[in-house]
Image (cartoon, rainbow, N blue to C red):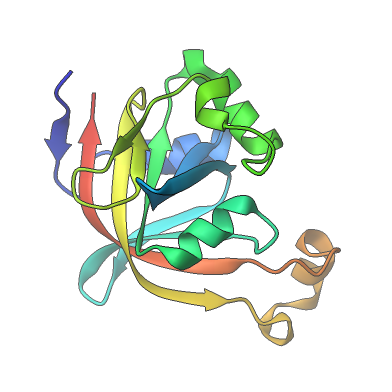
Length: 168
């Protein structure tokens, strides 16, 4: 099925809502290897006069190595009938299983980036990493450290320029 290209900011409210309420899947890597994981935090807007999507990935996550070695990522909104796959991608590690095969979902090369997107996704945002920054504990408000970082596993924030948005 051919995908419909959207123009920013079309589709963005749906991406934010899905991430906030049931999770979306961020994918990174390329044809030599990739992984995906469920995310519940996302920021989308405009920076540097360009459409930007920011995602956070902890260094302990298997996906982090693909974010670090690559130059792109995709954010995938799955239909509600595939919520089980979103849950699987958030509870299992790609170190231990092929989550795409287990879900089952189809990893497809991005239209504009090397990272895969999920063919079954109802909405996809493709991003080229423009800036990344490991979080510095000394710059995080104390109550957030207590609430979100008991294990000292501070996220890396990846800011991606949105190169494509497409839907089924």
